[in-house]
Length: 245
Image (tube, rainbow, N blue to C red; front, side, top):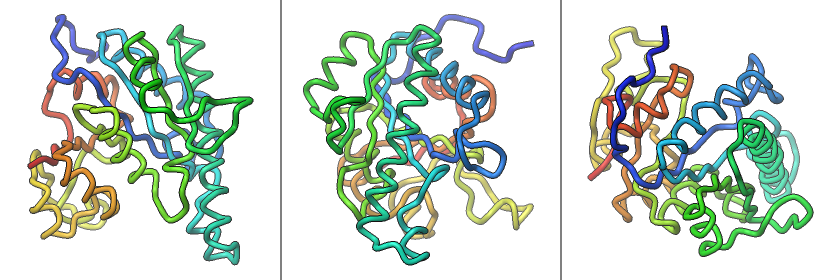
């Protein structure tokens, strides 16, 4: 039996930014692209779009290449970061393909110029796509080395006036310690930005988190792999952890 919300409901959020890790698309171990996982994620995203919610996505590239790991193996850091940005573009194109196979109209916008496969990031054009019912996928991070895709998510969310950042993870929220190591770890239903900083909780990297705090951008951290969870968050159910002011 499906545990999807059965009754029609009014979405809590009008415009969302969904932050996906590259590993979410990966095979077991988080590498490469798993077609089944990709299709499941696309189904969840389309469910939300079908509610009339405007959806933008920022996706990582860790299933293919991480710039920081590359630099630890001898690749120059700036070069490694650009390689990581190109990895996010591969994931964005894969997700676009999965969404369009389900009938969702999409656009990929890249912070690096790759005119043959993606539009350049133009804020006004992105907003126009949303107004026309398209899902917009932002690729290549911020287009600058030394910045994570978490930071790109925080930046793009502020630029397009998103109502919330939905940070999809493999855990069901933010805990006071690692639940894999501590079976008595406490999960927070809600927490303020200041509390998260004081407790040194790893919600996002500090640059991204500071951007969210400065712009009063709420963040919901939730488990992507529970059925219909994106829809449940959008409908205002108590899923995951809400970080706000």
